[in-house]
Image (cartoon, rainbow, N blue to C red; front, top):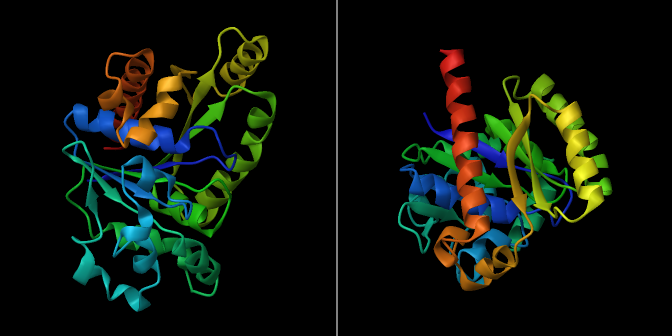
Length: 265
């Protein structure tokens, strides 16, 4: 069964896209076939994979805008794109997704649209959803489709304060459309020289002990450079601290997911 993971936080600039691309590449390195899905009209994940969204014939916007999903079967193979890493595949986005999203609220049970769409790609071991930096209709669809939401939390005061609102949305989704949704947190952009970073980390460890992953992603300029090169960090700079941290995060997260699945059986 495909494991669907939403990477979400309504705050921008907390490494959602970096995490989606890096986690996807590390999962491939572990032997998993992985599809990463761009759910943001800004198309950052699409561009990080080295593609120009303006030059694509098909994107996820076409799938959401298709009456009754009729176009899905026709383009299911054409819409997904290879990346620079074998085994890592992209479902891209473009700017039209913003206008498509505005019309979603007029559709009955729109929350389930993404879940239904992803059923057309059962061949992947993992599907990672790069959510937009907002608590929008598309974010609600992603949380409805996912078995797990992975939340990157920047170790800054305001970023941690905003976490409560996202967890309120997670609880609402659990109550309405996805009762088995799980969530995990991890700290990103951590600067060990900064006292505030350490204070925020301690608070997260105290209040979210059962949900907080132990691996911490530190500040690393290579993580900002790799999207420009159109490569995941483990290809762009495979021996760097950031690559090793994302590898460790991936192993830890995968182990948590597999442990949870075995407990459910």
